[in-house]
Amino acid sequence: MTDLSIPTDPPSTDSVKQPERVHLLDWTTEELASWLVGRGIPKFRAAQIQRWVYQRRAKRFDEMTDLPKDLRLLLDGHFDLFRTATAACQQAADGTEKLLLQLADGGRIECVLLRDGPRRSICVSSQVGCAMGCVFCASGLDGVERNLTRGEILEQMLKLQHLLEPDERLSHIVMMGMGEPLANLPRVLAALTMAKDSQFGLGISPRRITISTVGLPPAIDKLAASDAPYHLAISLHAPNDPLRNRLVPVNQGIGIQAILDAADRYFEKTKRRLTFEYVLLGGLNDSVQCARELVQLLRHRTAMLNVIPYNPVPGLPYLTPSPSAVLQFRRTLIDGGVNAMFRQRKGDEIQAACGQLRRLREREPQVVSIQSAKTS
Image (cartoon, rainbow, N blue to C red; front, side, top):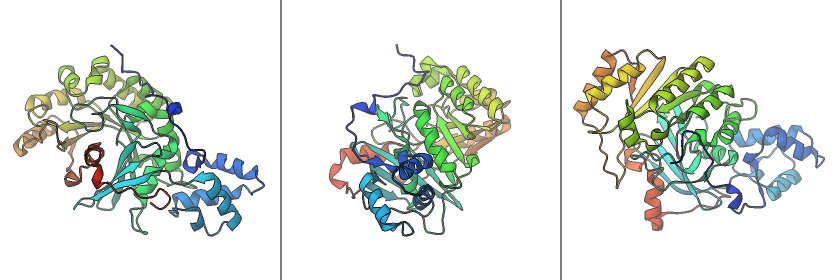
């Protein structure tokens, strides 16, 4: 049996035919400056271009009006600013918006904008599909195809930013969309470096950036060693190994204790409060006994437990817990001294849970309207 406790890359993207043009979002400001200088163009133009993309929300090079026209033409001839096409965009009554994006090689990913008071949070994917196999999640039903590039991760952030009004700005990023972020750690960290860059990038505080993982101890240790100043959220979903093995099959090669030990090391290194995610499934992990076991695991840790009632996925047998079960679960946790937050489900009517819209549109391709990547 393969030991999935150590993240491995999905099939290499080398076999995927890549466009000859360069995806600008794959380049750092320094790389762009070097390219410009090599063509006799002043280095400071790189900063102008990056600010147009990340802060002034330009969608095309010809919108960058303080650049010389010949430079705009040069950029347009060499770079792709955006490479995805918007295959679907849905909005829920609560303001949640979900994008289904089609990549240059035909793969599809999802990303979500959540509006909650003044917060404008985005949930971003790191892979096409997912290899973790959580039985209640739509993302991994068809396995994993490949890792996303730095540019493909950043493009999701920018596409969601374009949904905002001019006076609105993104406030929080959660790497909790399709895929396992820690299985694509170098590219995720590269994208987040630009997201937190206040000079050229999106300027989002590292304290408002969260990386969510199913719990891969070696990769958690690598994240801690990188000195990345982000919050860590671990998708626990069960208080004991027998139940977690059923719900999160990758756990069979890991075990909850190893995950908690890695989480403790991350806390000791970063001093950032941990978050544990717990999707509440009716009749499976929503019992008072499960809550009591969670109390034993978490009450002595500096951590927040986020409890999320299940968003049903068509074709899967899992249910949303009853209101009475949620109430009993909550009381048990609070009485046991666990710092717990019960999150309101958002976007039910637009299949906002990871992977749902992608699967729906693949079953019903006739309802998809693909927009030009140049104009979307």
